[in-house]
Every structure is written in structure tokens, then in C-alpha cells.
Amino acid sequence: MEAGRTGRSPGAAAVTVAALAALALLAGGCTPAAGGVRGTPGASGVQDPYFPRLGNGGYDVTHYALDLAFDPAAGRLDGTARITARATQDLSAFNLDLAGLTVAEATVDGAPASANRAGDELTLRPRDELRRGDEFTVTVGYSGVPEPLTDPDGSTEGWMNTTDGAVAVGEPAGSMTWFPGNHHPSDKASYEIALTAPTRLSALSNGVKVSADPVSGDRTRTVWRQTEPMASYLATVMIGRYETTTGTALGDISVVTAVDPSLSAATAALRAELPALLADQRERYGPYPFGAAGAVVTADGLLGYALETQTRPVFPASSFDRPTLVHELAHQWFGNSVTPESWQDIWLNEGFATYAEWLYAEDHDGVPARSSFEDAFAQDANWAFPPADPPAAENLFGPPVYQRGAMVLHKVRETVGDKVFDEILQGWPTKYRHANASTEDFTAYVESVAGEGLKEELAGLWKVWLYGDGKPAEP
Ligand code: TRP
Ligand code: ZN
Image 1: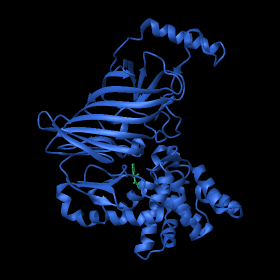
Image 2: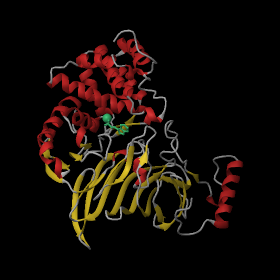
Image 3: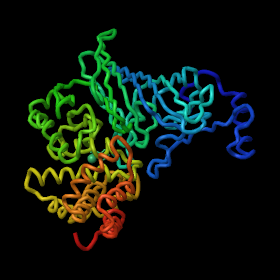
Image 4: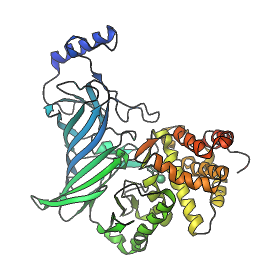
């Protein structure tokens, strides 16, 4: 599929370049060929076992500046993505993930680049090859009526137009429906998201609001800045009628909450608890990792689940309850700051967020985590597969990932004791703050904190509870 192409057409010259590159490879690998032709195309995916085409090879994004103009009447998005990245190999071309929409133009370091579409892959070929280590800037101009994705498990994500606006969420792959990027959690970056929309509507995104300025035709451009690293699946946009409340938490963290106006009264009490819940979690998990916080509650019928979108989790009205709020806030540490290296490590998000609910119930409702553990142990659905090895993409958000993931953490607690477990609850998000971590990073970390004497017992725990098939005889 050819969605757009600008600049020099590849044509005969490009064929020659490709032929030379092939010759250089045949001639013996790494020696650059005469004329300096040595770049190769970046990979079209990062080999995630569940989504092989998600993400792209050959570069790391450091910053996304998205300028998005939205026309709710037409449901149309006009976007410019300005992406700053660093090449991790010599590159003749590289890919961005983008689903739907039409690309009108692309540049690399200010020079027109050719743009080719094939499915969800946008391939850009810069005029000049990029050298490993180069920082470069990409701009992509694009537009269209975005469409959500249906996940392997049947849930809906991505950009969703509403009657008077839009909501965009993206776990695990939906962010590619509204901006081009390296859409795999292993490549985190800072963001600035500018939303131009009718002035009568609210326009929210991640992080701190830095400006809101009128532009022509009763429209306002609102700019949100997410300075700490963010995985693209945690980016969000809400445009519509919302009642917004601003305040602070934990001293100087800016809090912005937004609710559908019809939900104002019903959600007020729980919204007011947010600063206290964050303070409670800071006690257990260490410093809050971001400069902003909040929550968005949408009318039912749009989102089928709550999501931990960075700094500003989103909830359908029917899931805005205390356990779910605790869960999504805990994700700010577990998932958003410490982000999975690959989708296979998703239990590190959901197991911890579920365990945060158990801890809340233990601390505030008199329900020991051991009883939550036993309730989970008794449910057959939690034994369908091991949390560290979901059989397929459709299982990534299945019950074993949440409940059996939390059970693993409880077994760790019973093995190392409460004192060391408390150290782990703070030490793990400290060690991998704003970074990525894998299941193996986690088991190695726990073993290092627990000490040599518990190594064997922990190895048995991982084998049975984390990686093993079926239900152990004893809880
Ligand atoms: N990660 C979300 C949570 O906080 C839930 C979620 C995101 C989800 N995408 C999903 C659940 C797709 C089911 C299907 O739990
Ligand atoms: Zn979750």
C-alpha cells in the first residue's frame, strides 16, 4: 500500500544503492563499501514473541512532539509528529508503526524522505544515510479519520471517536492508530502532545499542562508535557465535555482530574481520595515517579476496561471504584516507571497492581493478603497458564497474569519475610525507575536481596509458581 510519498522518488538511483549495499554484504560484512554505502534498513519489528511487528529496529526514540488538530464533527485528525531519535546502526531506511491514516509528507533532518506504507509499517528512506550514534529528527505529516483496533482478546483500543470528541488509549498496540512511532514498550521517550480542538471542549493528555492558547475559528491549542520517559502504550488523549479539577498531591505534584459532567457528583468522594491514596502508596513503593497525577472518568459504553495511562489513568464510570483506582495508581510505579522489556513480562505490571489491591485490603479493610491469595488459589481460571508464559497474545490480560502474578509476589513475601519483602517493594521500582525490566531481572533482583541462603528455595518458587503449568497441591 502506498499512502504517501514525497521528496526524491527512489527510482533507478535507489536500486543502485540497494545493489551496492547487497554487494558490500556479500563482499564480507562490516567493511564499508567504497563511497561510504554501508547502511542497511532497520528491522520492521523488535521480535516481541506476541507481536513480532511491533516496534522497529535500528533506532531509539528520545522524544515525540505531537501536534494534533481534531475536528469532532468530521472525526478527522490532522497530525504532525516530530520525532527525535538516535540511530543504533547505520541506517539506509527505517520503519515507524502506523495503522490507518494517510501520510502526506515526511522529512529526516529537514530533508524530504520517501515514505512507503505496507500494512502497519511506514518505511522512511532518508536522503542521506544515518550513521550509528547519529541523533536525527523525523517529521511526519498525516491525517484521516482514525479507527480503533480490535485486540487478539476482542477488546477495543486506539483512537475512539465519541459523539462530541475522542478518547485514545493504546495498550498494547493502539497508539499506532493515532501517531507514527516505535510502538513497543522497550523504547520509552519523553512527549509533548499539543491538542487543537473546539474551545468549548476539554482537551487532556499525559503529564503537565504547559499552555492553552486560542487559535483561529473558536479553537484552542492545549499543550501537555510528559517529561519522564513513557512507553507509547501509555499515551492518552481525551477531547470532549469534561468537568476538570486541578490541585496538588504529595507536596508539589500537579493533579488534574476530569469526569464526564453526568458523573460529577457520583465520583466526587473517590476523586477526593486520590492524594491520600498516592501518599499511602508512596509509603510502600517509594517516591512517586512522575511530576503529575490525576484520573479521567468517562461515561460507560466507550471503554471496556480501566487503563493506567501515564500520570492520568482512565476509567469507565462502572469501574471507577477504590480497588480499581488503587490498581491503576500502583501501575504508575509498576508498569509505567518500571516498564516491561517485552509483552511476555506483562505479569510484572498486572501482578504488582493486583498485589497493591491486596495490600490495600490488608492495610485498610482487615483482609490479610493471605486470604486474597487463598481466594485466588481456589479459582480454576487462575491456573490456565503460568503468568510468565502466556500461551498467546489473546492471553496477555488473562486471569493468571493478574491473580497468579499476585500469588507469585505473595509467595515471595512468605519466603523472604515481611521485612525483606517491604524492601523489595521499594527497591525494585527504585532500581528500575524510568527503565525497562524483564522477568529474569525480577527473579535475579529478588535473589540478590534475599541472599544466598534463600536462592534454592526461590528457584523452586519460580519453577512452580511463575513458570510451572497447573496448580500446586498446597497454597
Ligand atoms: N492494563 C489494564 C489494567 O489496568 C487493563 C487492560 C488494558 C486490558 N488492555 C486490556 C484488559 C485489554 C483486557 C484487555 O488492568
Ligand atoms: Zn492493570
